[in-house]
Amino acid sequence: MLSYGDPLPLHNLHEREPMTVWRRSVTQEKKLGEPQVYMPKGHNPERVVWRGLSSLLAERPTASQTTEAAPELGAGVLEWIAQLATAEGYLPRGTRFRARIVGAVYGTQQSVIDEIVDDRLSMAVILLNRQDRRYAQQAVSAVADADEAVAILGDLAVDLARASGAATEGPRSRAREQGYDALDAPYRSWLQNLGGAADPEEHRTRWRTETHRIIRRIGEQLIAGAGDAAWQGRTITTGKGELWLNSAYAERSFRYRLARVLGDPEGLKADTAAPESPGDGPAGLGPETPAAEAERVTA
Image (cartoon, rainbow, N blue to C red; front, top):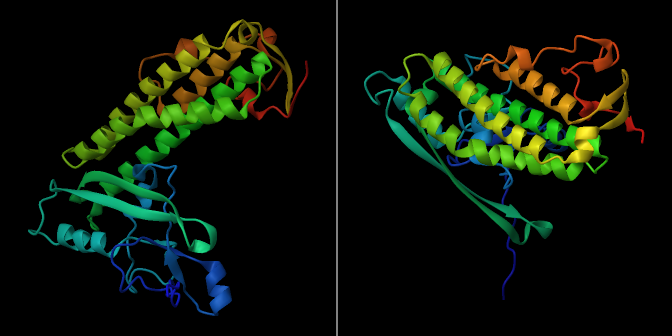
């Protein structure tokens, strides 16, 4: 006879299970009546592992460091590497290791497996050094750069769709997927080389430049393929007034916001300036205000 067996407790096993990232659960704390409850952090099969890098690099604070419970606890095996990297003489700062992330996404009543997550990420042990957090901070900030740039790309797709009178959710999700796909290999390569950089901030500047180049190229492709309807445009009503939205306005908004987030690596200030005449839009509306924020569209 086959049966499910007795369910295993999942909470507060972080001292005994070294291969899992843990998250604090306020809900379980209230339910179980315990002051601190940590649950295994599940994998999102729609996100590549580097987008959740902050969880991998999460530090396990000691009692002397803080009295507040950490929102996340890194895997014990990575904490062990961190101790070897922090203790002088054990692991050279440029030593690379490869983290392999394997997990299951469970389905109905946790009784079936819907998907398997299997991903790898190579990085230098300096990112786990507890006495020098500059490299880890720049690695996590570089992920935030990618997230912001992809969000702007998604807004461009929405603006172009609204300019032509089309639905918006499909274009947004496709543009975001295209953006992350294009940044995947470059980020992995950048992260591998981060440990050998003398200045992690300068290394991140190179990442911002590369991200700007990649996302702008995809944006230009979206604009070129938007069609005549988007080029002609239409009137939309935003929270700040009416605006004639066409592909030209969408492009200026896209370039302005991308430069504001990632800098202006190619000296494109002329392309990203705010409107100079009232004919470009109502007061308070400029490229810094994406039409993706529109509340309703008028034909």
